[in-house]
Length: 152
Image 1: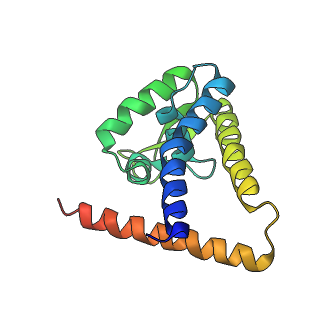
Image 2: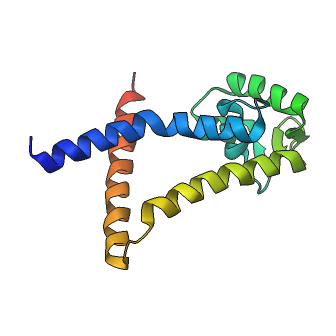
């Protein structure tokens, strides 16, 4: 394998293996053990916009609504999320973030933006275009593999 390809592969594997760990350590310091990474990612999937249905949030997280229900129960108990009945159809449960949940959302979002800032530091516009294309290629590869795996 070409030396550059070996380096790219090695770096990509290292990033993949370590980014969630670094994020988890960062979140643990910020929330002092009050929230798990799963709960933080559930908060991120709920977002700060309009309330979302349980199905929408479960879809974003690639989990079942039943699994999400357990996570939402915990977030509601901890004061980070609330359940709402849909105004159009009272059978539909929607979820949204409390003020405390929104604070977590913004802190988590800042971690991601800091990571993007570090990744793009010193890049010119042409380099940014190349980086965007590389990330798009990775995204397309993962999406394709996910689609292939969903048939099982």
